[in-house]
Image (cartoon, rainbow over the protein chains, first blue to last red):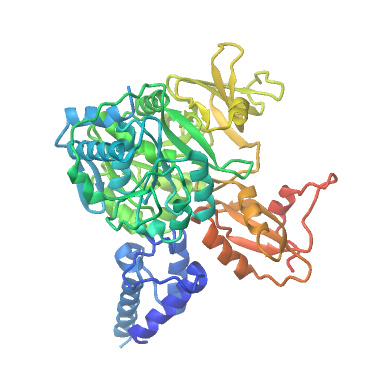
Length: 90
Length: 518
C-alpha cells in the first residue's frame, strides 16, 4: 500500500467517524487533538481501527502524539509498521 | 488574601523556580507573574473594569494561567471555558456572563467567531496564537505578542476577599449551564484545606492532564503556587505513553486523575511496568474509581498514596479518604476536608443516623457564593444552617455515613450524567436533537461504561414519515456539542417508555438491554 493510499484511508476514517463535515479542511500536519477532531477516548477508537484495517499492532509504548496526532504522522507510522511487518515475513 | 497573591507571593519567594511546564516551555514564577501583570495592564487599558468578566477559551497552556492571573490582577472575574465548547453552549454562556474580554485563538474561533461577534459586552479579544482577526465593531483585537508593550509591574488592585474571582460554568439539571460564582476567600479556603491533607510542598511536581475549565484541573495551579511547587501541564490524556514518560522525565510527584484517565492508562499495561519511585500520591475525583481498577492502579504505583475524593464546583471539594483507610473502606470517599464539616439529612431536613441514605450537606469557608444571576437556584442549594446560622450547601447528592463518620456516595438526586468525569445535562442534549427536523422525542441517559464511567445513550423517536439516520444525528451532535457530551450510542424506537403519569421513564431507558430499535 502506498503512502497516498494509506493517507486516503485515514482521511476517510476521520471524516466518516469524527469530522462529519466535508467542508472541514484538515491539514496533513494539523494536530487532531488541538483541532478537536478526536478526544482522549477517540484515540482508543482510532487505534482499534488502525489495528483492524491495516492488520498492525500498535504497541503500548507507541501511543504517542508523534505517531498518532496528525494525518501525516499517522501515515508515516502505518507505513513504518507495514514495512516492519513485511521485513519480518521475508 | 486574594487568589492572585498565590502567584505574587510565589514570585517573591521563589522568583527563579520553574512554576509551569507546558509544550516544552518552562516558565519561572517571576516570568509568569510579570506576564500576568502585563496582561492586566493590557486588559485595563482596553477598558476592562473592576468586576468585569474575562472569558478564557483555550486548550491547557501557559496562556490560560497568564489569563487567569492577569484577569484577577485587573480586578476582573475570570471564567475558563471548555476548549471544545461549541456555538450553542458558548452563545448561552457568553450571553449570561456578559464578559468584557475574551482570550482565545484561531482554532477556537473557526466556528465560533459569529457567536463572539454578537456579544455586545465585549471590548477586547486577546489572541493567544497571535493570529488576530476582526470580530466586530467595538471589539478591540489584541495579539499576545503585544503584551511586551506593557509594564511588568503589579497594577493597583481594589478587589476584596469577598469579591468574585471566578465564575465556573457547570451543567445544570434544567438544561441550561449555570455559573457557580466563586469569591477569592472561598477559593483560598479550598486551596489551603486541600493542601493541608495532600501535604503538598515546594518539592512537589504535579502532572495536570485535566482541563483548566474544570475545577479539579484548575486548582492544581493554585495548590502548587501556594507552596512553590511546579505544575507540568498537558493538553489532555489521549496519549498514555506520553503521560507515563513525563512521570519519569519531569520527576512527577503528584498525579491527579479521573476514572477515564486511569482506565486509559490501564488499557496499556506495558506502560505501567516501570518503576516510579518519585510519585508520592495519586488522587481520584469526579466519579468513583471501580474497585478492580483501583487495585490495578495501586499495584502499578506501589510507592504512591492513593486519595479517593469527592467534590462539587459549588464548594470545590467536600471530602477525601485518608490513604491509610483505603483497605478498610475502599468504596468510601472519606471525611470532610479540613476546616469544614458535613452531615446527611432526610427529606424533612432532619439529620439521619449512620447507615441511612440522605442528602449530603456541607458547611465551611470553602462554600462558593451561589449561581450567577440565579437567586432562586442559589436559595435552593445554599441555605441557612438552622444550628449554626451559617450558609450550608445542599449538594443534591445522596450519601450515607458509617458508624465512624466515613461517607459513601449513593447516587445523584437529579438526572445529570457523569461521563469522563464531566457533568452532562440530558436535557441539554435532548433539547438540541429535538430541534432537528425528523426528531419528535428524545431522551438521553447514562449507561455504565468501563472507560467513560457513564456513556451517553440517546434514544429517539422519529416524526412520522421521517427517515432521519443515526449518522445524521451523530454528525449534528459532533458539530453542536462539547466533545464529552456527544452520545456514544444513538438508537431509534417507536415510542419512549413512560410512567403512568406520562413522564418518560429514564430508568427503563437506562436498563433496557436492547430497546425496540427501528
